Length: 352
Ligand SMILES: NC(=O)c1ccc[n+]([C@@H]2O[C@H](COP(=O)([O-])OP(=O)(O)OC[C@H]3O[C@@H](n4cnc5c(N)ncnc54)[C@H](O)[C@@H]3O)[C@@H](O)[C@H]2O)c1
Image (cartoon, rainbow, N blue to C red; front, side, top):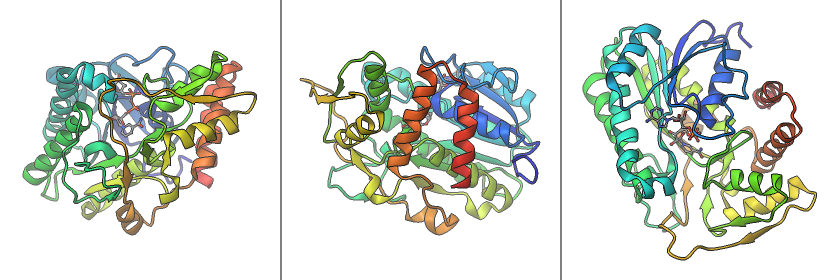
């Protein structure tokens, strides 16, 4: 995989490398020969994918807060990245209701700090800011969001990511236009699933916790529609965007990343699929909460732009994505070899 790879020997800085997506991304980048530096808080959950993914010792891992500009700048100076992926965030909607200020500080000022470091560090050629499908103003009219739609997420998490987009847009307009400046994009991915997500208040982790404990799965909002996809899908897009814009800055832009249209499922349908693939008595029930904070009922993305620009299409349909998540979870519960399982999935995905 290394030979001939754009990433072979590239210095790459990943914020949020101790998280679910960040751990998978680092495993892929290292496999492709990149020299990776990560900058994040400690892993957000216990257990966590970072400590299982065989990354320690294979990358430079710095524990730091994106709100700490001086520390982040020092790490940029030392790592001298050519490519930057910004994933560090407070990413949970419900947590953003509990602590909106922390969510804004991390997701908005954190982005300002990352953009500022990219601006001030000579040698950065390409960067991707990872936002979310929730950045759009959502009138719940069931339409697929397009990249030019207004940005105004409802809750503090979604809204802070809209702000992160706007911050990035301004930096691009004001500082990253000339040929000798970095090419910078944002990517707005839908909900991802996959092995190693242990976050609170997310559907598949809730399913995994329930089946591991031999309990019934409870689903808060079984009717909510989301563009679910396997975690490797958006990671492949982030890497494609970073590589293509490094070679030709005309590819820098704002990209939705989501599944095939009919893979946008309700939370209930996804749980049902999980139970079928899990087998051995997995069952679920709906338990709507009284006075639950508002979360979008329907979220669908138009992914025409990445299809047209990069000739991209999802590699794994939702059935396969759930199957791989179940496989990973079984390996974990049986005390199996997680790095080997991740590499098997990455290889199968790249060959799909
Ligand atoms: N998981 C999804 O379904 C999904 C969907 C769309 C977008 N995203 C985005 O992808 C990115 C990664 O999400 P994830 O699912 O891996 O989340 P995660 O919670 O597993 O990881 C978040 C990472 O950010 C780090 N972090 C949090 N606050 C920080 C701070 N103040 N300073 C430094 N590091 C900090 C954590 O330590 C961790 O490494 C986020 O930006 C998220 O908004 C996720």
